[in-house]
Length: 248
Image: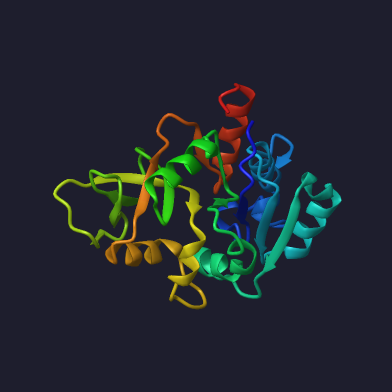
């Protein structure tokens, strides 16, 4: 596979509370699917797409994660760690790692550790470059408790939170499509000069703020790819069945 020569960040600092009891003695990044940790699965996928420079944010059982990565010879990659004394959420964690990700004009990939997919990262990066977007988000048409809203040009214009019965529109559009986010982003390093939020913050509200300022936050439709959230024990079991059935 053609090397992309990009950098990536893996979000792996979470407590993994939804994965208990699997996370009683380990972070969610080290929960295993068919004998491989979620972190190994994610790193291997990034490496297969030609990515060798990765930063991983860590917090819960941080030393355990770092020791496991070192014991595996960094999986043949150049790996740095961003240690968070307090959980900074997705936006805060990303901003803390700016020193590693902002030293190039090339986009980088931001990838949740607790998702598994066959999404074509090469195609996603190409689509990002072609659109000139600030950020490109992998999305699918599937049931979710949180939807992102996109206009006819597949640009972010709002979100709908089902449980909270809340809809937020930042760029009114006659036609809006509800799509579920897959936890994989391609982001231009220009974002760091635009992230005015400080401390602990989620990246999604930041995207909505930037979309309201006419920054292009673009959707990448990933409906035809396999994807599964691995945040719950039953999802881990289903992913194991999918792997054994060669669906992944």
